[in-house]
Amino acid sequence: MSILALAVVALIAAVSSVICSHLDIPVWTMFIGWIAFVAGGMTLKSAAPSYVSTLLGVALGFIGAIIISKSAAILGSDIALLLGVFVIVFAALLSQGMPFANLVVCYFIGMTTFFASGLAPALSTAVLLLSGLFVGVASGLFAVTISARMTTSSE
Image 1 (cartoon, rainbow, N blue to C red):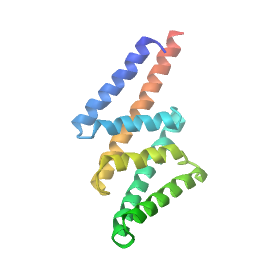
Image 2 (cartoon, one colour):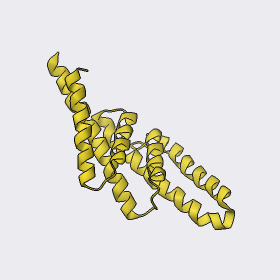
Image 3 (cartoon, helix red, strand yellow):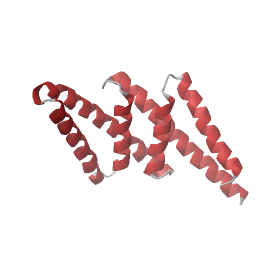
Image 4 (tube, rainbow, N blue to C red):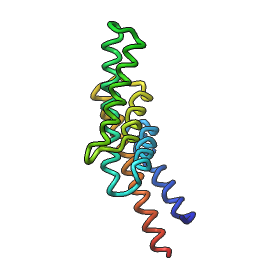
């Protein structure tokens, strides 16, 4: 990849960070979305399954947090954590059998995004995280598309 193509990719990331900042979306969520795009295969065909798998991972994070918080008083914090993590990891691993959203690594990226945020499982959290992840996946796709065109046109 040429220096110019690398600069364009970096510029796309920089512009995406400013967009997130202006929309009050944590910039780090954009980078996590970009990571999901790369982990999912970095193609137009893999972008949507990467995003959906990551979204479902965020949802599993919500479920895990709810299981942990609701069962801690009854089971104790260690058993509640064990149960919550078991359920969400088992569900993520089962996703391998799904025809469209089967990128297990993206499920883990989504779960990590939720838990790393430190936010409560709420609609506002979902909107915030899913928006940032979308900007990241879309930016990654845009960057790959533009840099591929630049590389092809320079040959």
